Length: 452
Ligand SMILES: [Zn+2]
Image (tube, rainbow, N blue to C red; front, top):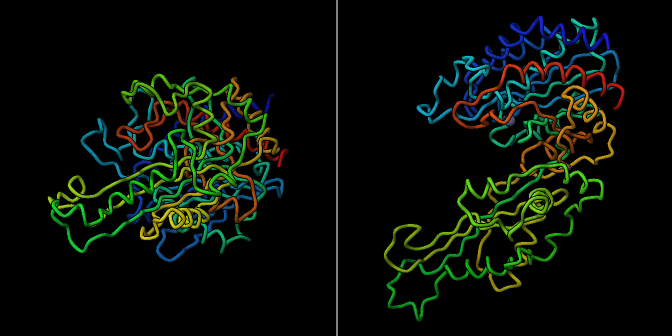
């Protein structure tokens, strides 16, 4: 208990300095896809001041992956994944304060990236300083910071870099970037995330658009796209592509019980979207179950003729984009074969397929010891039971890029708040949430040192 009091006192005493660290970081406009040597320099310096050995892993075409290792009292190793890139701030006129000014307004640091995810990264770094101040000596376990420079672009080179750096990155478990609080203000912990893959389907027809008087003898390629979509799913939402559900994880009894405790504002969503009902009329817990565990197939785009290219004739070409919403452990790489076989079997062999964008799902089992440690820390520190998502409805945690090649569990534990405005104008992070995040993370180090 004295240790915990000391930790709290040190975070309070150093509050201004910690907030200044965040603000300096936020003033660096490290927008994805642009040169960001300043952000790399900033983090490298900060990590070295904390006693880290820093290695920059360069992969052709990618900004450097920063790896900072801080030796702890135990060889047990926790990997902390974050990113230094941010999404663009545009439209700039929608901001009430400059996106890279990091002004503090009503207790929030306002900046692009303040919540996603410079605040979390800065808090994790400051947690090391706070630990040292409170307890002296090295942190209780070895920490490896892995800081991506292109997360907001989908981390296209991360897996390749990780595969080439397995010795450097060896660890016992990983924390992903956070997430936030739920509608009740509870911190959220997610043990997995969904995935997706999109395919562009193209049906070429006549060499040129043709006059509508010829429609009785010239086939219209748009029908093939429409019929192909119709063959893949019924009005009951059940996907009819053979093998589609084969690898999809089914929730365990314990995971289903967690759903009782989650909140999803289905009424609010309907109001916001102006809809009389949600898919299949689901509500409450059924809606949550669908959001987390139901694989889906959607029309993501559809185009031909007048609405598509403004042509007055009948279409010579039609395009559909199909989106597979995946759950753990469905493999995006398998989906192209399943879809191709389905199309051929239904007479749509003239439709060509091109994969557009994929993200892998992934998850950690509820009974993994790391999960218990994070829940305990969250409950003790925030004095409320965290909202635990056995699978989060969003995509993008680096299971395929980081956790799978290293063979370690990855869990997301957030510190943002409902007002974080991720990816939106006036993104910000409450100073109180940030400082709480520092203390929470330092406590987590101790719990995880004992658990992993
Ligand atoms: Zn992020």
